Length: 96
Image (cartoon, rainbow, N blue to C red; front, side, top):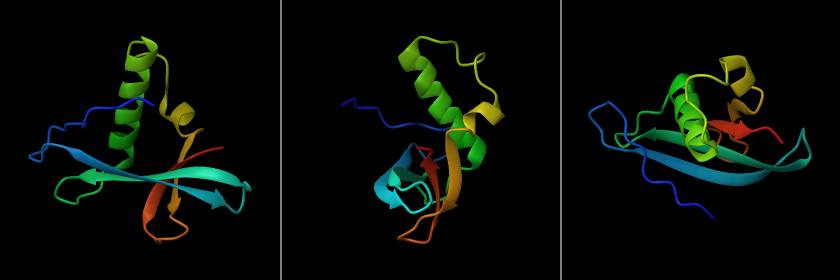
């Protein structure tokens, strides 16, 4: 278990809110981590903001420079966006 401090953004709101759920994915036939994320005012983060945050935390945890080892195509090999199977809201999920 690792506690990640609240993520701050350059927008006027001071934090982002992340909601996670684990749902059985009908296509992949495995439990899958779904997540939504948005600013404190309810505005959802866009695709690039999500990838920037994930890459930043990944590089910090692995000791890599945030600028160099990933491109957008590689990032989307493990993160996709689709409708949440229960809430029907746009959500991201990690590929199994």
